[in-house]
Structure formats: C-alpha cells, structure tokens
Amino acid sequence: MSTSHNTTRISEILRPSGRLESVRRPSLAGLALLALSVAGCGSSKPVHYFQLTHPPTTAIASAQAPLDATILVRLFQTSHLYREDRIVYGNENVEVGLYENDRWTEPPVELLQDAMARGLRSSGAFRAVTTLRSDANVDYYLTGQLYSFREVSGSGIVARLSYDVELMDLKKGKTIWKHSYNHDEPSGGKSVSDLVMAMDKNVHQSVQEAQDGIVQALTEYTRK
Image (cartoon, rainbow, N blue to C red; front, side, top):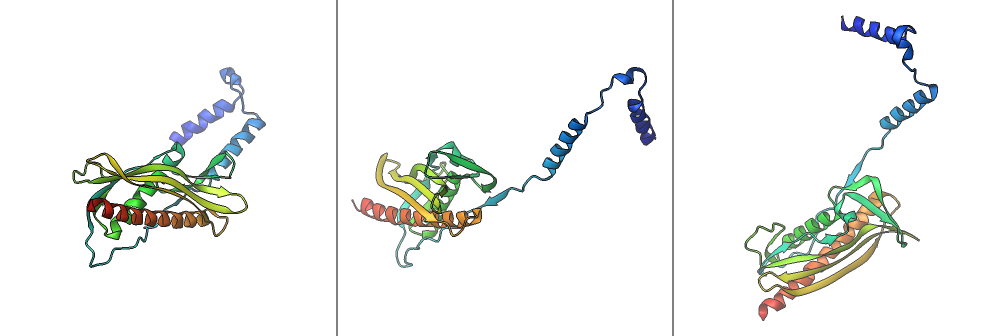
C-alpha cells in the first residue's frame, strides 16, 4: 500500500498542472554536480594509522639492584601540531603540513611519553616508573619540551625528533639532570611506512640516551 501512495505522489509532482507547476526541476548542471558529490563521497581514501614499537632499552645486570627511585613521566609541552594524531611533514623552510589520511595511533607527544615510560620501566633500573600523577610514591618527575616529531624532505627524507628533557627532584623542586635530543634518522624509502620505521628507530635511540643519563645522574645524586 505504501508503495502505491509513493508512486502516486511522485507522479503528481511531475504532472504539470495546478499548484505543482511552480515546482522547479533541477537543471542538468545541478544533477551533474550532485552526481560528482555522490561519487566523491563514495571514493574517499581510507585512513591509515601507525604506531611505535616497544623501545628495547638495555636492562641492568641481574645482580645489580634497581635504584630506589620512583619516576613520574609527564606529558611534554609542545605545539598543537603534536597534540593531534595526523603525521606532520615539511622541509627545511618554515612551512609544514599535515597528512589527511596517514595518522599516528596517538598524538606524538603521547607516543613519546609512552615510549619513555615503557623504556625506563623495562630497563629494571628503577623501583617504579609511572605516568599517573596521582601516585603518592613519586620521588622524581621527568618533563620536557617536544619541538619536532615529523617528516623532513630535502635531498632525502628523514624522521626528525627534537626535544629537551629534565629530571626533577619532586620534594626539593630541584633539577638534577638535563638533556637535549636532536637527530634526523634517514628514511629507507619515500613511503609513510618508511618514515614511521625511521621515527621508531629515532625514538628508541632517544629513550636509550635518556635512560643512560638518568641512571648516571641518580646514582651520583643519591650518593651525596
């Protein structure tokens, strides 16, 4: 029954009589634009997400006791570009851009925080490593500023990672270690996947450097 009613109403709209004569028919140009719009919606590209792997930091010797320290890894300060999940690209000039369909599983600043926490934790060099500010047992906190986490193209393509990091004594409000990391890791190819592999390697290297520096700084600091 409903099909019959719909058919009747459609035929009435198309019938050039009475009030229905004032109904404007779409132009051929309008129909063409509509067709292009529908086709565009149907051909949208899929979004690809990329993640970093677990940093393989060097574990302390089994006979060596971990340092009596609980470290809180805070989220670094950074530009709004690295608080979003889209992969950033650019060159040596001032302009940068964002890939629309190639994205990180998390914003870069969160990927770095997670990599730093997991790397330091898996080393076994500390009593505990956390990202929870509510942890009442925290002795020190790691904080910093992320400057670059992006693709840079020029004579070749590199994954650029740049940040400053420092370790603070929570109770004394005192900085006991600082480090600047700046490195361009060459990409093995021109694809986004090649860039991600290069960034993954770059992050691993930076976490290892941070671990080595923190262990040395805390060892000397706790002896005083």
